[in-house]
Length: 315
Image (cartoon, rainbow, N blue to C red):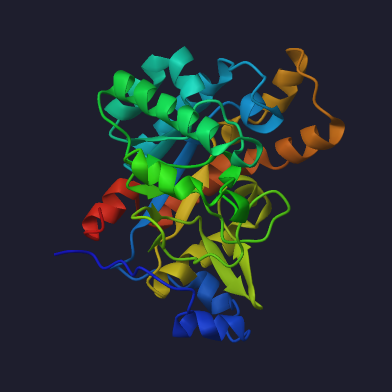
């Protein structure tokens, strides 16, 4: 029997979302403590497989060996919980550590593309973007023997000004993207974009947005990346449950380096210049990541984006 996955083809809210827009949905202690129903919506766990200096400080940095240690630790956690995830692989990492990518594949995880150089779409031309993504396709296909069907833009940099990327991705053969964060942020996001999985209006590409809640008329990120460290764990888990109760799979994202509690200090000791503010914000609460991930995987079912979409007969 197919699992039902609602696809929103417009910006119109569901009745539950409309209530949330009017402030009618607010968390209560009962909702925090209420167990999830036995037959639940299946969520998607996604991993941006990249190295911290390249991803955060800029593509001019070299890929370090810490990405291998961090990814192997993450693979152990996923194996413990018997969870398969989608790994959006930065192929600069794949070129240096191809055996690591094969290990991820051999563990049953989906290999998708995160591009090659981690250049933000807002800083490159469409032609340069296409070359970067095509390079990533060739590298991943050569390493794992299968062409990726999913893509995530570096730092969610498909914004209003870079919507041209969708047609390029579709032309390159991608079936889905998880690149548009439906929030307002000074560096990324399209606040008016649909929060549900949906199809692009100008091409056949499917978009799988990261998880957000609609609160007080605003889209609020609840789980993933820095939000996974800064948002209190009970609230993040309540948020995933809230999405599931209105029929929405939660797309959660994580970086292997967020398990690396001493990583920022180690990179600084290795000679990388890191401002005090950047170092503080990037290292803050990393010690929470692993325990919160365990709790999330214990409470909710997760799979790959590919499986989520295939089971709903979308790709």
